[in-house]
Length: 239
Image (cartoon, rainbow, N blue to C red; front, top):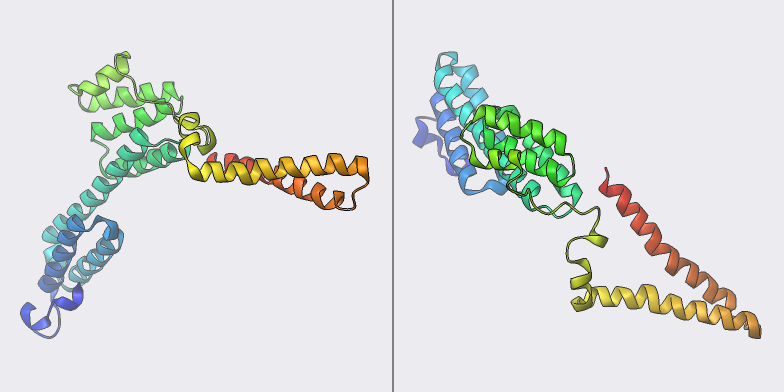
């Protein structure tokens, strides 16, 4: 983006404080159109703001205004991420990620009641109802007219479906598995083949089949692998 800004159009070959501010403002405008690269764009905008501050300390008022705009953009992005994860996240790990985003957003916008409500919804979906009630009290203190906060506080509105522990037993799990060809493939791989191996081991022990050991180890691996992966995933979900 910076390569498109010609020094001649900004008043000479070397950038002055005003030029740096123009570039910073362009980066900030780009943030509104391209939120996926917001971190990089805001970092570049901040660099130009600091460069302008060094060149002309007297321009601090305008620089601070742009700095506040950057902080607002960061807070807006974090608040949006918190809403998505806390309200629509299926698994507990997603909801916890939303709570972290809400905490970060509150560092910029501690006065914004909506973030406290979002955090309360996430806490309720994790079963942490006492903490959720405290968040709702704070939200009502910040904005006494917040309708959703009052409804959640009084229990007249549900916070949503409780978050699932893991992907194996999420919402509508048993409803969807029989129509999912990927799951059926996994079923064939991890259940039918191990079952056949167990059968061969059973018959091999009776008949003295030399391939019994081969099928035995196949059965151990194919039965143990899903169990081990599930235990590992459960541990990862709790981190």
